[in-house]
Length: 315
Image (cartoon, rainbow, N blue to C red; front, side, top):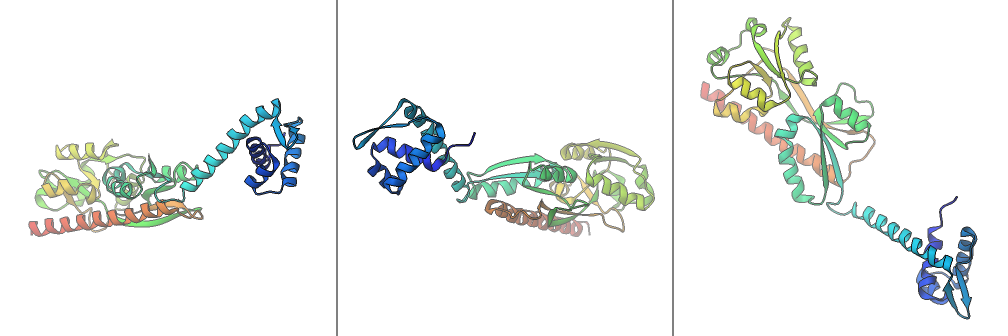
């Protein structure tokens, strides 16, 4: 069964409301003959008479009264749909679905979202916790629009916009022998107890690969899914961790934790924004990307400044 023609329904409702072909034609901007033809076509479509013609007036039949209830509802819903779609083009009316690692959720997104909401107060925001591999899956299943993540190995149909690069370092308590000497002995690395984040994460795989290249195995591992819990264990001297300085900048500045280079080589990570390659970003998404750039640039700049001051203080 074919759906009813919305133009015929609109003409039908106008004729039912005005009670005459002249006024109905004026309301829908058609000729009287076009109105008459439209109503006849609709009657043929539904298989029953909708109006009784009484002189110059037209009166609804019982079938017409029944259809009028549904026709008004259909036209109102269509009008609401058009209005809702139109709102999406207005400033601030949209949605944005973000995938982000727990680290960025905790240390980057709050500043971004605070500023974003100041400009897009009516924008609906949803956040999906996701590592790099999870972000790719969420994008491909259309569950998120953007992801703040480490650069994945394979992009294919996805586009990666770089945001910032960080360097992973050893994180130890001030009482650790490495902190006291200000130096890490490579021969001691494999003897340490390590407290690291999520063995299934891309960062963990990068760390393992980095040390494997030097023939070093991280033998004793404690795995946690919380950066805060890891930092507390390290403060208590229960192990050594490997993190980016921007994650521990407050603790390093206060002296409750110490950051030390991994060695002569650096282990750097590239963070960025992942999205569909051929899907253009809308206005709110473009602004979100811009705010991510501003906030992360400030975070890295502040972290580098604090590290510089710490080096000067030690010197």
